[in-house]
Length: 239
Image (cartoon, rainbow, N blue to C red; front, side):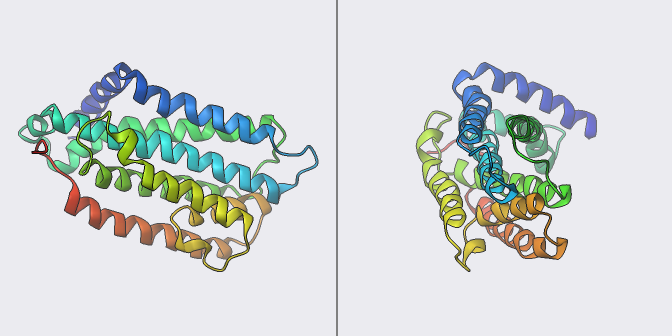
């Protein structure tokens, strides 16, 4: 099964590479946003200020590279009846989804390493604790994957993903900005709040126990979105 999943992942990567619009959204946009955000940080900024920038950079990767690409890819493969053909093959449903989403996950992780590296090269201090940052990346990626699977059920084509993904982008980025600019006790209620808080803990060197509420919030959001994905995801073409 593992070899079949990897083979499907290689095929999916080739299909993604042919879709220039999706490829640009998944690669170029997060990098450009990361550079712009890093350049806006004052030279004397400390770890707390940089944690806001890094949090937004990580969320940009999770939004564009992971969430948008997942939505567009699954909707496109469904409407091409590719999902239906794969489902009739040797792989179980979970294996099909794992193969299709493997390139998205790997690309998202690689992009995160690049944007964090760029931030450090442009003046950001290295994270004081890598574990909370790793949790922010892994849990945020999982949340974005299931959010993309859920949104794909309402998306008629890969092109329409530019429209159907907008509400989640507003919640994700808008929530991150709100959390970063206010001292609200409800920060973890928004989906992006957990990612921003975990990055803060990583950059400032706070106690690991301080990362637990944010990690729990991301797990809760992932569970809710997984329920929605199970209800909304379609294997057959719409209509």
